[in-house]
Image (cartoon, rainbow over all chains, first blue to last red; front, side, top):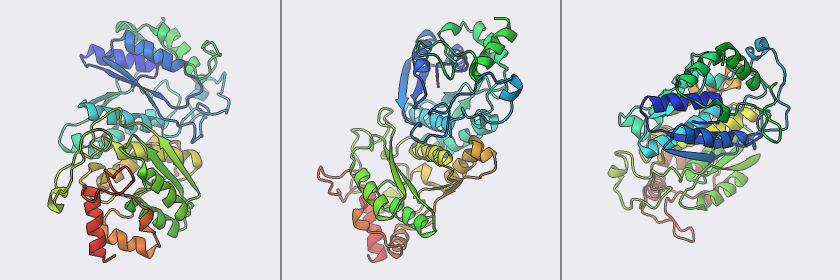
Length: 213
Length: 213
């Protein structure tokens, strides 16, 4: 799963480095801006994905998030504040929907390894980025599917889950990720320039600073 | 979740009878025919759903099923054959995708009860219709979401899961379901007439016969 952000780019690079033939999947889900999809295309191509699909599924019609509606994205929060509570940028059940669609494509194409760039350390406090969620989804996937029932076990890989943002950046650097083509901002200017003040920009900036990159 | 078939119509009638305000959700997922969506609209209206949404998510692009591709739907199988193995009409991860989207809508609207008409007795052998799958999904839902973390527990209701098809028909009759507006056939004629020979038609026919309806 490739969003066009920093974390999923490093995850794709990691999977490629382990010898997997990678099918990249992105989602046009009604997010505020489409810059991340442009980045996703660049990232998939640059890192050698065998194929890249963008699936449309409109989560904005349900509402409930600053990332899919007119609700303002919080700006300039302290790192301490970012680490506490679940912010308004949380999109209801987003990673469950995304993983389900990844599972559908995986099973249909005979793939049993799903890679997701979630991270439970320097993150925005989303419940669907935690190890217990990933484990529960993997268990569900193996009960839900023909492949699971027949013994071809699905594995949901989350190689970044215990890394700091700085650690992710160092890993990406080692794997040759070109971070300049990734896009993390929740609320960019019309020309795509990152705002520099949303949680995602702040975490990214802190990561680069701490990694000395 | 309302497909337009018999089982989901009875499930909706059951939820309404228990006093729930029902938000009906159907999926335009690339199925072979759209007659079931017409039926879903009629069913949602007839049974008094407060709202009805049809979400588009194209599972046919992934392939892997006779219900979303050119692969022929099996016809005239014996009831013994229908009860064994997972048929080619299985759609990879379909109920996981559908439940995830239902969860997204539920959380965004502050609803914590999700109803699905799966049935593990007179059914087509799909793994994502079994009680263990429903339980695993419910657990995942409560780990995945803000509402789950905050203690508003989601419950996935599957009131038909242990009923025979005849039992479902008897329940539906008691609840006043008009079966004539439901549509079960996997492969209807261009004018919507059921084929009468696919697994779904055969199970439906057997159900009505056994229920004496």
